Length: 166
Image (cartoon, rainbow, N blue to C red):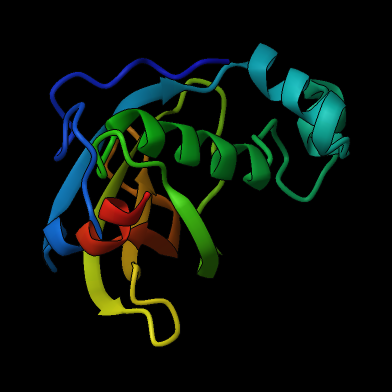
């Protein structure tokens, strides 16, 4: 269940990016990932064993009337797509919080999704001068460019000053 690798979508490439480097308004778009019955079933068996994710027959009798991917699978795929897009170069995406997670519409077999991120805010840490905070809106869209999930990611990054101390 590995999403396609991103090529050229990274803002930071292979070099580390620091809080000082990030600017409000930066955008990144990931590569895509296609949901299939097999990867929906596999994820559901392990992490979200509800009828609408486990079989076509059970899904037909569910609230949705058809097989859909788990929202948690969509969230995990979104995270993987953003990691592969490398918005922070080689600096890891270290999350503090996810806010306003919203499932906009179901993801079905055959849907191909991608994620778009935009930096909305950056602020210095009040207690740790070697770190800074970045808030990014991440929207996952399907092949019709319709949002399927949206969320705000609050991440922590080292500052250049903090990295110099390591």
